[in-house]
Amino acid sequence: MTTLIRLILRRERLIAPVWMLLLAVLAAGQANRYATAIPSIGDFAREMAANKALTAFAGEVYSPTVAGMAVWKNADAIYTVIALIAILMVVRHTRAEEESGRAELVGAGVVGRLAPLTAALTVTAAAVSLAGLLAGLSMAAMGFDLAGSLAFGAAITAMGLVFTGVGALAAQLTVGARTAVGLAALVLGVSYLLRFVADGSGLTALKWLSPQGWSHLVKPYGDDNWAALLPGLALTAVTVAAAYRLAGRRDVGHGVIPERPGPAGSTTLRGPLALAWRLQRGLLAGWTVGYAIAGLALGALALSIPEVSRQGAAVQEFLARYTAGDGVSMTDAYLWLIALSLGYVAALYPLLALLRLRGEEAAGRAELLLATPVGRLRWAGSHLVFALGGSVVILTAAGLGIGLATGDPLGVLPGTLVQVPAVWVPAGVGVLAFGLLPRAAAGISWATFLFVNLFGEVLGPIMGIDYWIAKYVVPFPNLPMVLSGEEFTPGPVAVMLALTLALVAGGLAALRRRALL
Image (cartoon, rainbow, N blue to C red; front, side, top):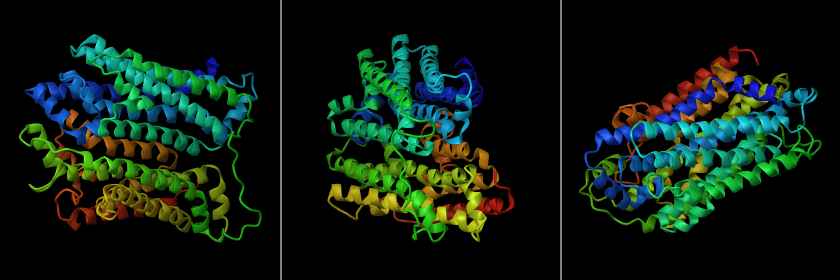
């Protein structure tokens, strides 16, 4: 097993230090920004605590101090990022290894049946623990309370450990790595939604049902409630034990949930578009249902968002970013924030759909398909139809869900559909990466998604880049705020569509000229 651990460490030697340092920078950088840029942290804390729209997104304010407000601002993003990293890391070294056939080769040696799982869990657990420790120590190094800093680090670690176990369990249930990641990410999405609804509605007891809520309930720099970590540790133990039990009982290369073979002699797969639909329909259906449910849940909170005093500097900044016009209500601002947030997350869907192209190529199935009269552009274009068109479908489902919850079925739909051009820009990057650097396409796609989600609101301000400058780098802040007082203007949308077209054209041109890898 020691050899397997060393192998995993070698494969993660470049990626792991980057994301560990990123999380530490997110924590300490935000604290430094607040310490230097906000003259009265107490007034700022009161303004933010009164803004229920922001409370839903970031959580409750537990400590009106610089450190406490820095945690309030960035903790939810940090918890989500470390959970995603834990899922990707453990699945990469378990299910993905079986899918590629390397696990079977390793198992032919003097290696125990459970050694690959143990090695993956050991390295992933150590990585998330070290990341939490670095984040906590970075806060302590700035002079903040040591107990609060350690509690914050422990909350980060606990979130990572929970989803290390969830990822390991998902890897035993499914046959494909993509499906395992999707299943574990679904658990993360439900966790976030429960936490969001709990803070947005004031029903804070719901946070005890959410792993994300458990980390929030630690309340760093406030109560430092270490007991809130116990449910996470218990769930980690349960999921890891279940993963071990299933790993010892199933065949290598198979999952507990078997694949369903298609009907023999199927007459429906008459072309690449039909084949792409068969491969993409599960992902599209899952996202569509998830977004419809999320729309209903998030929209139900809209009517309970109270108005706040508009005199404070922080509230003025919030209104300047997310509204356009003097008569806009906080409910309108909340609805635009919801639509914008759903757009940010929806940017992942086309990237995942496009990575199916790389999966088909790596497995050798694309070569078999391209040996027929089907050309490369036709093959890639069939998946591109569902990657780009599916984005429209899932954002439509979200808009209808929010509208039904607010009593105006079509009222929010323009706000969600206007996100589509911004969602397509990262998809264009994914196509370009697949065409030029196919082996790095997955890493580039995930890095693009994280960059788009973190730069404008989180990393940019920490690096001293103003939000209004960051608009030139990230597409979403440039969208017309059609739900919060701004008229639709075609200029930004046209620029995004042109950029997407250029990226896709470049990727497809590169695909035509390169060898299959």
